Length: 265
Length: 271
Image (tube, rainbow over all chains, first blue to last red; front, top):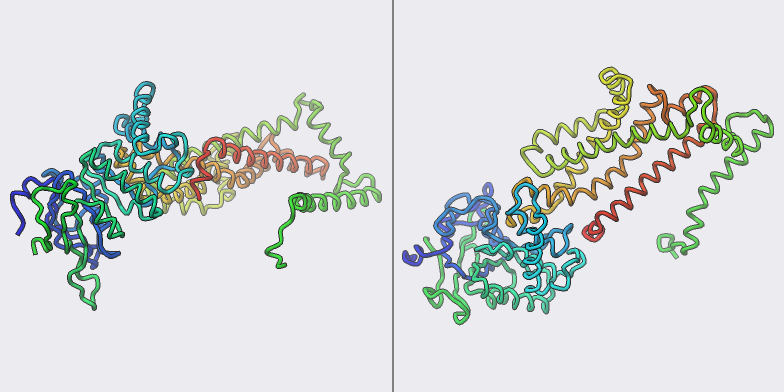
């Protein structure tokens, strides 16, 4: 059923992944191949494993069965700089100013002993961070602490912080879930603009279906196809719909118009 | 209006705050005056005149035998012991707390140990300290260290655990290794908490200091109080107690100011 040619060229391959905690099966038989530069939105009911799948991609958890390949290599089983992340809350460091929050990402990889750069290196890093902050619209708030920013501003900061690392994959866990509708719209525009510019592969979990449809170049719907009422934990969720979206924007060439995807079933 | 909805005005608040102190003072002064009227040599409730004479004698007149100003010498040696003890305990507590609170491999052996150790009554092992470390400065400082380090460590361990997992993961996606993660994320977030914990254990630290000085010492505020107790010299004891209270309060106040000054982000981030 799956197209061997497109799978060989895929950036991220999810091969028969299961995730279970004790008797509770959360995800079962997940097979996906995702091209570089896709914007996948993950939707589905609560408790359907969207966030679990994101944690697997992040390396925060390892799958119980199966494997996830990134560029043909098995995914590192702990979070690292190749994958950026923005959570709904607690994404920025409260004890650092806005500028230092972003500068940190330039300092940590280069200073494994001190965790901070000194002198010229520090100046350069700060300059680079300031540029990134101007780009996300936080140029006026460089010296503020996160607690002094609004929720939308904090998420802008979290995005800038993730992007300064130039990750290949950006993972977003309901990043705009706590924001007002108006601000959410601004954030959508910002995110799409950054996505086009950086050609990142994005995975975004959202509760908001319309958000999922407007933003993504591909929407993955998580649902449980089988439910045993006597043992609700016996069967896990799978990707029941895998729909390419917004062709004009930048959809992968190979994608068909619409397909249900019980891949590998 | 219900009591719970009534609050004093600004000036009323101040008056109510001062009131208990004034009442206590008045109570003392009337009783002191009564007793001194009956017996001018009464030692139990000395007048302010007698107390200031005692302070004058101890703080502003050199001691006949040694030539030292005893009050200031006592203060200096007590503060030195207290400061050394607090500093060592703070560093040790911070290291243990961070290790147990952030690294599961260290938490497994450390947490149960710290829990048990914090239950040992420090005063009960004071004799052991005197036997092991002798009667010098070391045993007194060690009593403070042993008494408050487990408390600090357990508190900081708990605070380290409360740092949201998301932040630890975010730091790793920003390229942190374990060491730099602790250095740039965990430690800075725990420092204000350390100052707050220090304020909370300040009372215990003074308790241990006075106890150690009372038992084996040749100077110090606690030593002086227990020395003059033999002569029922309340005119010395009361000013000393007031002075210790003032010192403790000042240290608490300084730590609070220091927290605000050094960690301006802390108040906002708690909300």
